[in-house]
Amino acid sequence: MSLLGIDLGGTKLASAVFTEEGSLLSRDTVPLDGRTGEAVGKLVTDCIGCLIEKAGNNNQNINSIGISVPGISNTGKGTVWAPNIGGWESYPLMEEVTELTGDIPVVIDSDRACHILGEVWMGNARGCRDAVFLAVGTGIGAGILVNGEVLRGSNDVAGAIGWMALDRPFREKYTGCGCFEYHASGEGIARIARDLLEVNSSYSGVLRNRDPQSITASDLFNAREAGDSLAIEVIDVCIEFWGMAVANLVSLFNPEKIILGGGVFGPAVKLIPAIRREAVRWAQPVGITQMSLEASSLGGDAAVYGAGYLALRYLNMKNSTKK
Picture (cartoon, rainbow, N blue to C red):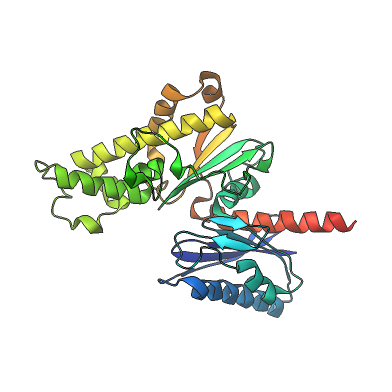
């Protein structure tokens, strides 16, 4: 049995073929290269078609397909809302994929769900029934596992914690992405640095001569390592936000583990002890002592592993209903 996992992100498409035991048979990544709308849909279906054909040529079958999307999967309609992909406000991805795949089962879910499912299958959440994957990249989201099931909410929006309110008063600039994401996402780190460069005329460090629009979160982590005062200020504020978010997740869900992943963790992994110290100040005191705070063991592959596990779970469910 072979399982195909597809991880569609805002900038790239990753694919992987797995055995039902979770062994990786093949993996590939292609950039979106600015594609939007139907061009992204075609990239997904071309990728799936190619891998089905390749498996057939090797006397193998793709038995089930899971797809991770960067937004909301409307399971009732088979449509996807993906804010970082132009033209994907209500994109009919399921219809396009199933026209190609025929009888092969296909399931689509959010990247939030797939992140935590990947860690449950082959990562640091194995054996957990209550765990959270806090993904910090371009944006911020959380995959939340409660009693062994992914928490989805009434309209599949649960886990959109970029909108978590961690500061006051409300500012209009939070409208597009939320308070937490504005300050402490990968894009937020660069954004806050640009804001400080504009108002802090006395700063003369390594970032002063950079084009502000070219500054990235990676630049801030590198500058912090070199002792840059502005970078230290920005990242210290992020530690506070990440710590408060961890504390709130502990107090709300009482998880066994919170796993930190996404592109920022990464370079922020070494900050986990400081994040925990901040979380301890805010969290429910019993829950925080019983919770392990860890980095993802799957890194950037968490969602594609989760998509593979999604395919396996869906196939098992379909097979059990036939009996």
